[in-house]
Length: 250
Ligand SMILES: C[S@@+](CC[C@H](N)C(=O)[O-])C[C@H]1O[C@@H](n2cnc3c(N)ncnc32)[C@H](O)[C@@H]1O
Image 1: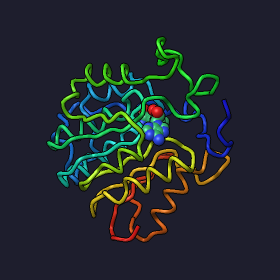
Image 2 (image 1 turned 90 degrees about the horizontal axis):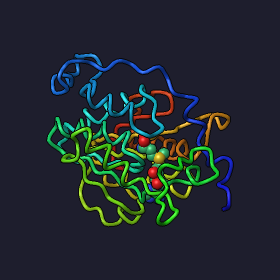
Image 3 (image 1 turned 135 degrees about the horizontal axis):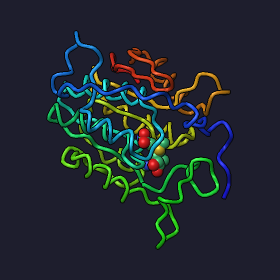
């Protein structure tokens, strides 16, 4: 197997995992006022997030959840590229449930470059013994089912650019956490961001301004969004960046 370019590889995420903030015990529907502290997912959702396979630390997850709550007020679907085993999807689903919208999550479920056998992020437990290939669909489905959030998610199994080419309606949120090469990150940006509604939120994971900290492809699409003049940054939580679409140019 050829190895992905060094600069395309994300930094070791496990080393960035923080202490887990405690979830609020308030009902999630009562936690979205702009005067209130940052909204928190339902405690059972947060517990499921923490237990799920995946790479997102808790503070980034809470920032993603806050963005999802805000974006869901637009009444439009929330779109994720990069489902993996459903860790981040749980948070989008919780926000979607409370707002009465749908979370859509796209993944071919064969894993990114750095998740293949022999690589740092490989998990042999998600290899299908019949094909010898990674298949994260079963774990993803179990994760959503156990959290009671299946009804609020539409899962698209396939390549992100192909799904984007079929998509035809506005989105309230686009969360990009798929392939971390320039080819994939750029295709995700160009495929999905044009569907993002005005005032919708673009969330990019693994944004590392310093190449010493991690691969640069997510940083480059984040810069592209800001440099377009069509986005304003509204939050930074480690490598998770949230931008609001404020203009038409991309
Ligand atoms: C970093 S993981 C996503 C982690 C997940 N968001 C979480 O927080 O748990 C990246 C995922 O993107 C998927 N992926 C990579 N390139 C893709 C592409 N071109 N189309 C669809 N999925 C892709 C991989 O299969 C992998 O499951």
